[in-house]
Amino acid sequence: MGSVTNERDFTARATIRNAALGLFAERGHDAVTVREIAAAAGVSPALVLHHFGSKDGLRVAVDAHAAESLDAIFAELGGQELTEMLASGEATTSVAEAFVQVFPPGSPLPAYLRRLLLTNDPAGAALFGRWYATTRGVLDAMIESGVAAPTEDPAVRAAFLLVSDLAVILLREQIATAIGDDPLTPTGLARWAKDVTAVYARGAFATLEKEPPS
Amino acid sequence: MGSVTNERDFTARATIRNAALGLFAERGHDAVTVREIAAAAGVSPALVLHHFGSKDGLRVAVDAHAAESLDAIFAELGGQELTEMLASGEATTSVAEAFVQVFPPGSPLPAYLRRLLLTNDPAGAALFGRWYATTRGVLDAMIESGVAAPTEDPAVRAAFLLVSDLAVILLREQIATAIGDDPLTPTGLARWAKDVTAVYARGAFATLEKEPPS
DNA sequence: CAAGATACTAAACAAATGTTCAGTTCACTA
DNA sequence: TAGTGAACTGAACATTTGTTTAGTATCTTG
Image (cartoon, rainbow over all chains, first blue to last red):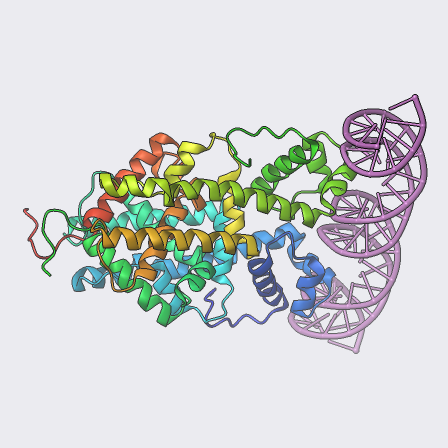
């Protein structure tokens, strides 16, 4: 339970939590009132407090729910697909790609992930910590199997790869206006992944050792 | 005027604006009250409204001031230093590096840049737009002069380079706990820049043409 | 120096906010 | 069926919020 694509929980508690997730993601915790959440969920403001104790309790519940959903996506990357990817040699270890494949277009989770990582609350820090550990493990495995290039500082390398990937989600809107495609759509992601893969494969500086063939 | 390192404006208006800048950066616009800003600036709450009309007017003024300071930093990168960098071949076109060199350790501007880029207000979008245009120009110049590798999609390439750089500032705290060094200190940045430069120079995947020696 | 504007404050106000409480409906079970 | 507890609501409460207003000090300028 807890998947985002098929949400089968229609209890009032879940409805409230989902309404809060959407509003929190769009406008931030402090800018959203309990009354707005209640109205969006179609219940009375008192019921929100009845189920979650306080507005902050609701925030904690939404954080946990969002973190669980987000972890489910990331787990796919670090888990099963790693073997396939190592075998095929394809580099599809991208959080952004997983987002596009799993989430419906209007999902509030990308925007909520943004809030989660930017507000200094422990839920965001814990999420990043787990994702970093997974990234580090994948990177080590890739290096050992000869897919990824070795590096003197694998801690920084793993952080750079993760962070560059998350930046697509964090700066989604800005990237969209800059390149003319939303990077969290199949079309935009295809453009993005192609060029980023080129950088990861050959770098971004002109190769000084070899002269370019043309 | 408007530099951050030497702030010579000691008028009450500037004091209030700077106090608001710090509080906004640390806790977000909505979580900070006019009374807190007034207390931090050592003035009465009414004076805040007297100078800026409303709390939202203060936010706009702080946004403009922060954007001006941030633009001043970025302008150095895209402007004068570009020529030197192209001549020397060194790759120091990093916003993060400029931050470390220019800002005092406890500067609120990195955190405020974070808020600026995450809240969908026009000031952040405009800032990113300017920086993207500059990055794009620098990239084109680097490609033409043979420093940077050509790419089929320079719009995406420029966005990726800018966004990967900004991510260091956006995810500063998370990176710090992950790698054990604050990337916005000279020590941490040195580690970061070294490995990122390696990726930009040689990529992150193992080169497939040559078999690994082991 | 006179006077007008500007900087500044204390106090109060109206609206909004999180929260509480008494009471009602509903579901399940003994 | 009677009853017990949970789900749920409407209304009120206390506090906090941004803002206003009236008045005082301070500075500038003729």
